[in-house]
Structures are given as C-alpha cells and as structure tokens.
Image (tube, rainbow, N blue to C red; front, side, top):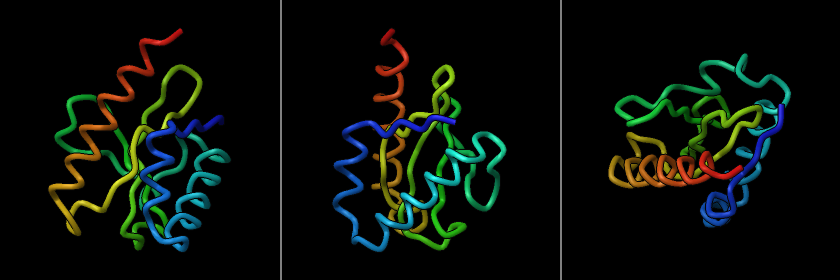
Length: 110
C-alpha cells in the first residue's frame, strides 16, 4: 500500500524528538505493509471527526505522537501529526482539524 505523508505533516513530525520520529516511521512502514488490515492497537478511528479519520499509534499506542490519516483513492494519506488525545486534548483536536482540512484539499486534487 502506498502511504503519502503531506509536507505539513512532515514538518509537524520534525518537531518531535528523534525517538518519536523513528517510532512513527516504523508505524508507517507497518501501514505500508498491511494497509487497511493494520488494526488496533496500531490504528484507531478518531471519534467525533467530521469525516472518517484514523490515527496511527506508534509503539502500539505507547508513543505520545499520532499521525492522522485516511484513504484517498488507492493511497493512504497522512494529513497531520500531533499528540495523543489524553496527553494534550486541545492540540489533539487542532491536529485532527488540520488533517481534515488538508485531506479535503488533497482529495480535490486530480
């Protein structure tokens, strides 16, 4: 499965410590290998999102970082990177909102 990380999400990931960046890249490799079959605890649905959105949970959820994604055609697109919900609810919601906005823009491109 092809996984695309939007440039804004790459920039957000770069703000995290290297250990968390490595953990997220490892989780992305799992997502590339397994696609939609990758399930909990590695991924989870984002509740209360205005569109179907999932969160990638590095280290089976033991990482404080999350990547927010959805399928766009044949590609899984990561729209943003942010904190785990209980760690920082406000920034989690901001990351979800950013992912929704960016993924909607990505979906409208040919």
